[in-house]
Image: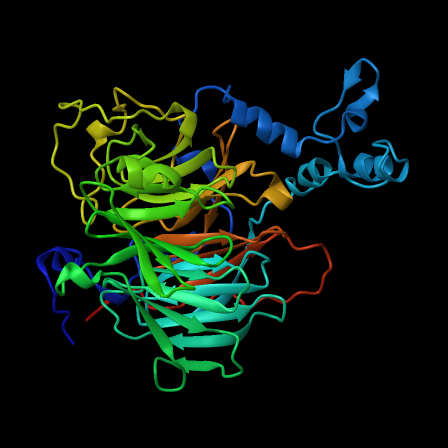
Amino acid sequence: MYFRAWNTAIGDMGYALSRLEIDPDFSDSESSPVGDDNDTPRPSSENDLEHEVAQLTKLRSAPHKRLKQVHPRRPEFPVSPVKMLAGREGNYSGRGRFTAADRCHLLNKYLPVKGPSIVDQLTTRAYVSQFSDDGSLFVAAFQGSHIKIYNAEKGWKLQKNVHAKSLRWTITDTSLSPDKRFLVYATMSPIVNIVNIGSAATESHANITEIHEALEFSGDDEGGYSFGIFSVKFSNDGRELVAGSSDDSIYVYDVEANRLSLRIQAHTSDVNSVCFADEASHLIYSGSDDNLCKVWDRRCFRSKGKPAGILMGHLEGITFLDSRGDGRYFISNGKDQTIKLWDIRKMSSNATRSPGFRNYEWDYRWMDYPLRARDVKHPSDQSVSTYKGHSVLRTLIRCYFSPEYSTGQKYIYTGSHDSCVYVYDLVSGAQVARLVHHKSTVRDCSWHPHYPMLVSSSFDGDIAKWDFPAPGNGDNPLPVNNRRPRRRHFD
């Protein structure tokens, strides 16, 4: 079976297309739940972040001030779980219960670094992994046209097995509606398909056993023009979709009216990631291969026709964005091997061109990042903080804020080309965990919104679950299979 490129741009993406990829440099003895930090690069932050977001993060994850006092002149930090429980029983906070910050301070001690247990193993690359907003469902999408939806509250039982249609290259992204009734999936075409996942049937074959309705993102005046969609997200009310595409554009689709409502010619290269900034969905963040992050305000776009602001700092293309959900801060993963934290109040109206800071030829799809570029800084960097240590190569690797409920968004975590998951402290920039199990690139990972549980998906075909199990809980996770042959299968 051979892969036929449908245009030159998509054909160029076809480097090392495979059903299963395992790095031959890995051996069974290297598989362990937590990596040895002695041989890994340390993050780049030289000092603790001195910015408003650092103070907000500390407030969200610091215990009540009376719990921190051993005696009036001697504060204790961090506060032990025993003292926090005793303080709750003694009603030190005056509320008779833990505050949200108390809860985050307690749960921050229990990072999901134990394991992993294997949720599923397929002989095709895993591209997407994401929990639903309430953590009850988990979605995993694979290159081999499968999208599997598991019920995380019922022993990870397979609830829906979606067989995608009109697949080009791979399933690039999926998104669950807030009410968990619908799933949309995108591929390298201008069509996004929407599936009702609330039906009783487990198997969902496109337009055979169930309808996969096609949402057309190319306008009527496009004349058959074709492009691919890299990123798609539901709005918080479930009424709209926002998408980023290979034709340098952002699309907004009205799901209720079943029509395309807005197209923004946003960047000068592929738009690899888009997301809504907050619950209101007026602001949209976008990241592109033109190295820029942009902020779009739909309330004034039609009159101005340009972004609300531009943020510079990455030296290479941007692979993913994640919003903090407050309409102010977001993070981006970049092909310059960094994650950057942004405050949109620092954005500028125009991008300044600074030619000359890149004097090398490089393609992230098959080349390692040049050593000479690792310490280069953008001359007009507007980011608040930079996090280094992971590897962003071969694919659009994703990064996220840790959950607000259990961590106060104290951490940033990301997949990596070196087959690990990295967790950074947002304030200090320190690498606090490195999860080692996979044998190939970890493209995506998702932290449960309420529990210390993280699930990673890799090009080796594994969906792996990391947690912090309570002692003596009697769980018997599926053992990791370390005996698979080290081989590559190519179409």
